[in-house]
Structures are given as structure tokens and as C-alpha cells.
Length: 253
Image 1 (cartoon, rainbow, N blue to C red):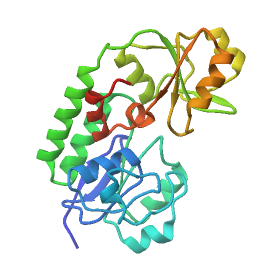
Image 2 (tube, rainbow, N blue to C red):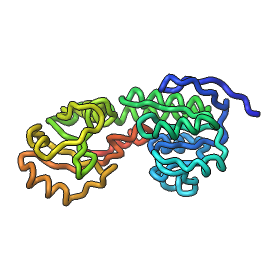
Image 3 (cartoon, rainbow, N blue to C red):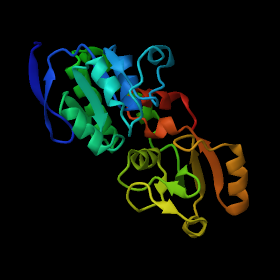
């Protein structure tokens, strides 16, 4: 039996993890990308874990972020599973903890994201590569700090309209960029067309995920809210809290 140690995760849970994991299942796309970028031994991923494309294509899929395939997971025999409080579902995580060490992140700010990356680097004994990526992420996100302005609504879904509100990583990112998020409700509230009109945003940001907004939605929005500028944005940049943060440097989003 391999040596283990106790680590407190970001939900305050004490988890007994292997000193050097040999097989990790990642249940969160942004964390999967980071794990593969630092060279961690990922043996399972969700169907939404699509980056880096050249590395994930040969990694078995264990279901979605909110519907795990427990039989596949057990067959892979991971010695560590890594998830996230918001992106995964509580019952599924509880079932996995009966058989496997499960380390959970809980992320609302960039500092939370950097803490996650630091801890995972430590868990995998890949601190040097993790530190390098964190430095690149800090530099990239600092380069765009305060670069935007205006009152915005960030839409993530259509029919019904759903927006990113307070107490989300997206809201933190919007504020970091210099925007004022007009949606003051927590999490991801539904909004009516009339409520969006009343909020009177300068700009409406249409995310590429989870709903795949396209140009036709901008045309529809222009007729609905003529005073607001509509813009398609890369949802991965605003909501993925791993090594993808490095890409802010080269974007004009």
C-alpha cells in the first residue's frame, strides 16, 4: 500500500491522499487542463474536459460534471479524485468518497484559483511547473486589470435568460477587468427581457458557454435592447480558473 498524508481541501475537509498519486481522475474541465499542463497522471476526465485537446483525446471519459459513471471510475482505480464544489454534484461526490480520496476546490476569486493550483502542484509533487504557470497567470491577468469600463450583464443561458451574478468567479473576473456587473443577485439568476431592459446595461456580454451564443443572438439582442452593445465573449476565459488564465494576455475580450 502506498504512503499517504492528510491534506485539508478548500471545503475544509480532511482528505487522506497518496504521497505521490499514480492515477488521478479530474471532474472539472479547468482543473483537468491545469493537471495535464503540469504533467500530472490523469487517467479519467469528464466529457467537458476538452483542453488540451492533444492530451485529453486518449483519456477515458467518466461521465459529465454532474452525472458520474461510477462503474467506469471504479474500473480505472484512481488513487485520487479532484473535483469542485460548484461544478460537481454533492450526492455524486459523497458516493465517490466512500471508495476514493476526493480533494475538492471551492473557487470564487483569482486568489482562490492560485491557491488551488499551488495545492494541486504540491499534491502531485510538481510544484516547480505549477509555480511557473501561476506566475504566467498572474502576469496575464494583471495586464488586463482595469482595462474595461461600463455597466454590464453577462448572459450564460437563453430561454430563460440566465446571468452571472454575485458570488461567482465570473463576477470576480468582470470586476477585475473594470466592469460593473449590474446583476446583484447571487449565483446565476434568471432574468426576464423586461428586467434586462430596466437594468439598462451599457453592454451585454454573451458567453460561448454553457449556452453557445452566436451572432444571431446579437442581432436579436440589438432589436430587443437597442441602447446596449452586444458582444460575444469566450466563456472559458471568464470561467475557467486554471492555466487558461494565461490566455488573457493575448486577448482583446
